Length: 345
Length: 269
Ligand SMILES: Nc1ncnc2c1ncn2[C@@H]1O[C@H](COP(=O)(O)OP(=O)(O)OP(=O)(O)O)[C@@H](O)[C@H]1O
Ligand SMILES: [Mg+2]
Figure 1 (tube, rainbow over the protein chains, first blue to last red):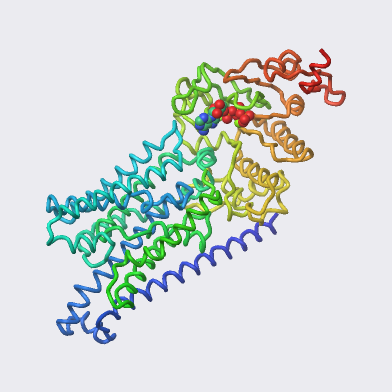
Figure 2 (cartoon, each protein chain N blue to C red):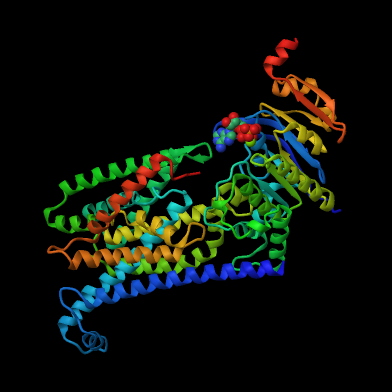
């Protein structure tokens, strides 16, 4: 018996180290991306320029590049990417289905409509846009759940189809608003709608940061419950998890993360969708991989943004890049789904 | 032997959505006994078990645990007294058997508490009882249907409760393993006084292992009692529309059913 204990501990320890190493790898990759994004752009900054700007010296042009352009962009991208990552991951895992994510379900589209409407018609503040995005997303989920409910059960296929329908309606509304919009607002809107880190607002970012500080410990506390729920709702309940309560909390967290992020950058195509499958692939399907999902989200956003800004002759918003990557992945997932290779329960 | 927790229910109405599956059902689970629930497919056995173990909400009526309303307990406290092996379980792909069985210790652990020595002991014991020790470090996804069933059973055993519900625990098992699992449950019942409720379709095994039988049909319990009281020609006809002969099993002294195929019974008549 002792021997088997020991064996389990060894196996478990190996697992943990492997997991830990992979997380560290992602972290290093992310740091590399941060450094590259701060150093390289239209203008390449040397280390000495960066440090001297930090210590208050430095030219006014490097000051402008660093503090007004690159830092907001990089830290905004970091925070938004992590939010999309966690938000998407939670949804996909709770519904046991990679298609069930804020992008496909129309949550990000409705958030966009709401934020846009507030911006265009009320000329309201950016914080008000964030609030509208959260409300819009929340309504989408409530309506989709409500319509897909059959007794006490959620019919998954119906839920996803309803989400796609809501998304189509939201997109129609977006087109309508574009026509109605003042021509002077159009270019900002267009950029925002394709998902871009150009217009990051510091006060919106601050709200997201505060939300992060509050939600991170909550997620740490819910980790074990989340892992039990991944065994199946019934068995988790019978093992003593308050499944419904935990799920409501997790859905709320996911909705708030993605909606706040959407209000800042606009809907970055497929970002929530991509995170789940990538995280599952490298970290397995049975642990609550909130942190890896956040890192994957941030790496995707920052990587796609840097490539979009620097590699092509024209600047491409981050959403265009993630769209190019995401669309084929979605296609493959849909085909597998139709073949029944993705089991949902 | 300890006196196991008492579970009773009064005037239950249970269903899904607007549909009522079970109405006006009152039941008392015999403490420290093995009860077996029999009945045709779709008659509501799983539904009844789910309601008795708070997996689905009641439409009407009350379930009592030790005289208190079940809904007044918190989830973890119930999970220390009642465990359930549901009928259908999906495989958690990447988990090893050992890790899966550890999940059965959830109700005994607080937020960040690691597995204690006692947790490991219970897990070991459950693995040994279900003969899963040699497979402990294998991934659940790589197991056969029967092995998977035993891994789940071990998880439930590691939960170490006074009442255990099992919904068709022998479905995927070969006959020796069916007997082994039922013997294991019997031993658990005799040694520790665990109250056991099993849904079984194998009527001859039901008759052999049950201290008490509940026969259901169309959402109602239509007859209850010892094996010899419930397993009769007349009852089987009534419950399953099954023509049969009943003899007494010469070894176990319980009723033994010889079912007649419909063609055969017509010819005899
Ligand atoms: N999740 C559900 N949603 C809606 N209806 C359900 C659900 N589960 C069961 N039912 C219905 O309730 C009735 C009773 O089903 P239940 O699963 O309790 O039967 P059972 O006696 O366990 O059958 P079996 O022997 O096939 O397991 C059936 O008519 C079934 O269609
Ligand atoms: Mg059943």
